[in-house]
Each structure stands twice: as C-alpha cells, then as structure tokens.
Image (cartoon, rainbow, N blue to C red; front, top):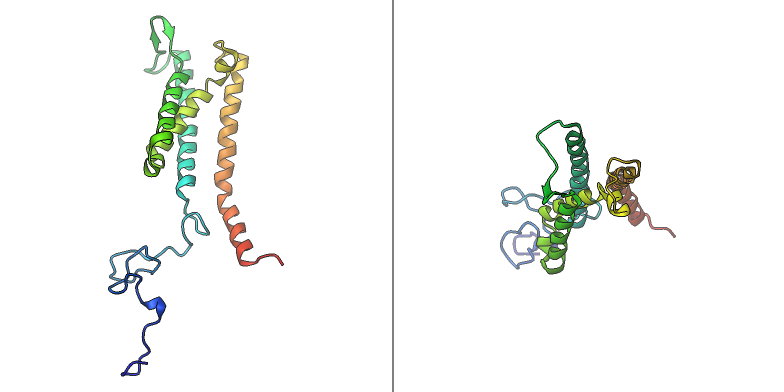
Length: 194
C-alpha cells in the first residue's frame, strides 16, 4: 500500500517498456486516446479469431486469382473461337503462342522470389496473384501439355476444364471450412480430453 491508501500498480498495469503509456501491439490493450486500436476480441490472427494468418491470406488471394483467371481465359478463348470480341490469337513467326507460356513465365518469377526474396516479399499480394494467375493459365491448357497436341477444343481437352473446376472447388471448400476448423480447434483447447 502507498501512503494514500491506494495499492501500487500490479505487474499487468506496468507497461513492458518500464514507463510511459502502453504501446499498441505490446500485449497491452490500447485505451481511449492512446492513438491505437484495441486488440481484436476474436483472438490473434491465425489462432482463435476469424483473421487469416499471412500464409492463409496468400493462399486465399492465389485461389481467387486462379478462379478469376481460369474463368476469364475460358471466356476469352470462347470469344476468339466464335470470332467475337477484341481478342485474337497471338502468333510469332506463324506459331501460335499458347497461354500456358505466360503461366510458366509467371511461375518462374514466383519461384525466383521464393528462392531469393525475403519473407515480406514472398507474402506480398502481387506474388500470390501472380502464382494463382500463372497456375490457371497452365491448368487451362493442361490437356495440351499432357498430349503434346492441340486438343484445347477436342474431347481430350475436357481434362483441363475438369482439373480447373476441381481445383477451384477443393480450394474453395477448404477456405469455407476454415471458420469451422478454427472453432473445433478452439473448443478442443478449452475442453481437453481426459
């Protein structure tokens, strides 16, 4: 007790820096007027809260880029085949340039960043978008790569569509189930067996 009858501050009231107001992010909730936001009530990202951790966020962005690119490329190629719209096939020296080439280029760039880039660069949203986009461009022409023949519009080309739609469905199911998985994990921690 101090001289005026008020108990001294306990360990939780002393800022970790040893003095001064608490700083947001140091484990002490920011109060009104501290210039920061209070810690989210749902827990820290990637644990019990609803926020995604950086790896999950990158995966989600990649999945969204994959789905959007796959749908767009299918639409553009249908338009080219029907002779509608502003797009035309790209050729160089009389050879048609398939869009899997651009996908390989994007994945090569992402691979270079994965090998040489620092953590913040690897988790940058542009890298995630490039990965999802590149993968979609390759998967869209997977049947062509598998048969080494231009089967894009043939019956064998259906494997590319099945792979693309299957990939979108599986990844989408994973992201849709994340809140349920987190809830189950949280319950298991709060009510351990035995």
